[in-house]
Length: 172
Image (cartoon, rainbow, N blue to C red; front, top):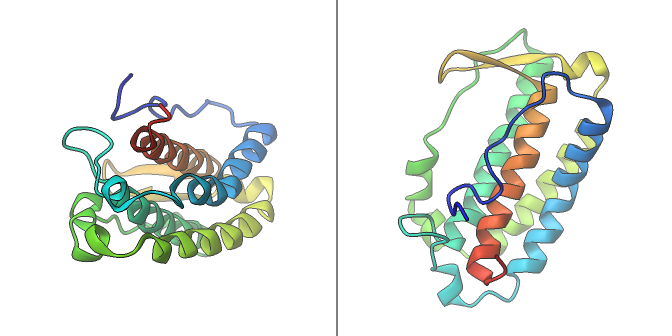
């Protein structure tokens, strides 16, 4: 198993169907309860365990999911309110090394992931087919990403890190 990418890398289909959007939104909607169920009984030792050699600890992964998805939600808002905005990237590696990511209680991010995903899913379910075609530009590579594709990216991202947490739990 590839511990860095246990579910593989995200591959976006050339044509995104309404069923794919529905499935991806379901993945985003279900992620908080899956994470909470999985990590609620983690010991401190498990929280400090990296999912692979050189990888983040379970605690860092949990806080990273919130940081990443919070940024993702804001990107959706920018794309809906501006014409192909150039989004602000963030250095996730350095964020993962900040003291709060390395030491804060996980419930702080778990509570925020639960609330964020509830609001995000409400927002996503209200997007029209035309809205899904709106784009933002990512400064790394100057690549335009549609909201439809970004739903898939974040569905994959959540499942990707859920798989990392399952490795720490001994379920993979």
